[in-house]
Image 1 (spheres, rainbow, N blue to C red):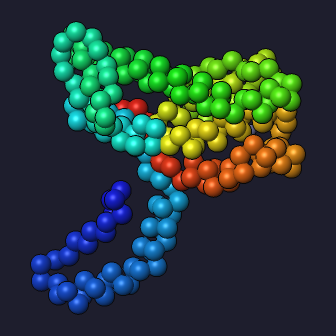
Image 2 (spheres, rainbow, N blue to C red; image 1 turned 120 degrees about the horizontal axis):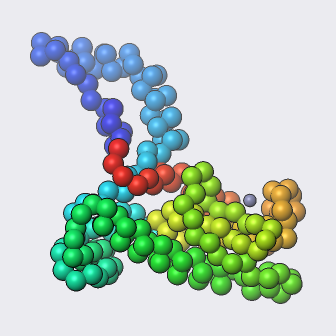
Length: 210
Ligand SMILES: [Zn+2]
């Protein structure tokens, strides 16, 4: 069984179709359980910085197009054109990391701007954005006035980014996840539960190769 959830059965040449079908049927329960478990645990997506690699970006797929020349990175429709004087892997990684951080900052600030007016009216100060590589969370809000957001959010659909931003901004008012926090979320973003479910179903994105 592979990541695409195809099932491969290896059988001796002399096995009849009937035998194979019987065998698969006998493993039916196990298969069903395993497939259900795999559906619950999405497989990670690896970000490879090679020619033609596919990267998730704001909920869609963009394809890396590498070329040598004077330094320039542009997103041209679904093609991310990366032009560098030197295409050594570490140079590509560094340039892409920087490009993703710049895009993250731009889109995260816009998302904060979209949701902050509600909180400004309630007397809160706009937190300062920090884009970070975070291992196990999407964001956090510090008491010292920072909103920390995971760089990986730039890979996710904008509806998920907005959900995380709204969640963190609600912590300006409610520091825990109690009923008052959820009541506030309901006001700020009535469909936050659906967004949260989507976020939890998305596969993790990890740099490098499997
Ligand atoms: Zn929280």
